[in-house]
Image (cartoon, rainbow, N blue to C red; front, top):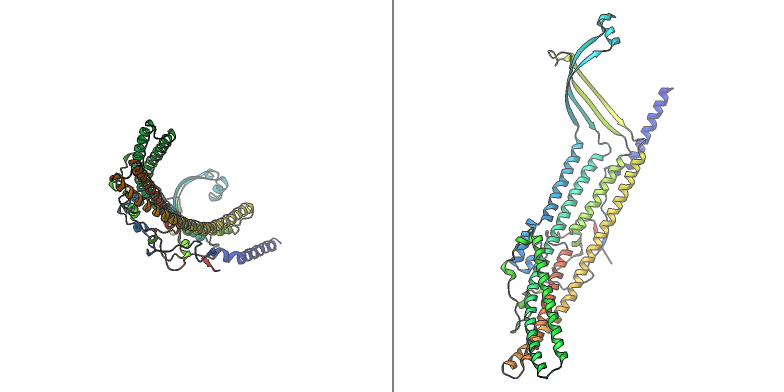
Length: 505
């Protein structure tokens, strides 16, 4: 009867294993499916492209050797980026750690024991002689033992692939840090350049406004003007002083920030001479003399929408979802029994004289089967959690793709509007320069008063100040476009390499 029950139990257990394996075998051994996200074929805001090709080192389009040098230094010395690179190496160690489970565990052991044979055993060996019932003997044992857990459910292999996906996540995360670093360095470079020009412009405005105030004070004492004109001049002077102090403060902050990006202490960081160039003003200068940049030629031509799928944060989110997909497969394997092969071979003898001999050989071989019967709640909790984590990672991937389009459209929209504003400031600046020239000649010939000359000089300097800051906005917009497109790491391939697909209208 006991034999029949055991046979039925084995049969039932085999059927269960076969059924579950048939249902989940494909899931355990197959590669996770790619996440499909339909993307628009074109961007929302069309920008007239220039003739600059898509290239990895986009900052060289600005043709500034100083900027090139700063970015090269930052990539080599920025500590955040260096930490991100170290994280890649750390992630790789988990791959080799997971791969070690694919091999058996082998141990060498040697032992020397002094034993006392129990009384009943001693009696058997001594033929009932009571004087020999206390037998003490030495036993030398040495041998090799090995155990190997069969990867019957591909759990170990999935763990290795999950670790590999995490390495890819770390690489893309390092690229995110690198792209952000390059953009931040470029932003601070142009910020410092613009602030120095703005401060120089504000100083000239302050000097002109102070001279106007002195003239107004004299005219007020002579009774030619009322006190309101004097107070207005004082207010304008204080406003200029406040703006000048603010520019100087921001300049110091930007220098300290740039030092941090370069991995240097602000106390030991010295600015190079290329930040000491004087801003041109007056005398027939146009806005190109301030920046020397034609922004319309900086926008990369023929920007396909799929380029966003090459952004490191998008690829990082995709690899992160892949990692959780493998984790889900690992947790599913917990529901199946584990098969472990064990074996041992060696020698055992009370004497070392003939220790290694055929008569002293000992060996054993076995198969251990561990079925998860009473920890099913734990396994269910782990599996459900892995499912939710994977679903969350998929949502994060899709959200990252949408965010990439949002950032790109925002950058393109800002560039488009700021470029239109730049054209208005450009016209205003050129017009103010013409007026300044006219009244400069009239002042020198005695036709116009000095106050009139200073007033038009202030207008021209203020127009230049607005143009300097608008140029800074355009420079930042162009940098944002490059950053939003994920450019700066390598030239994108002409075909899609991710699961994101264009959405046709």
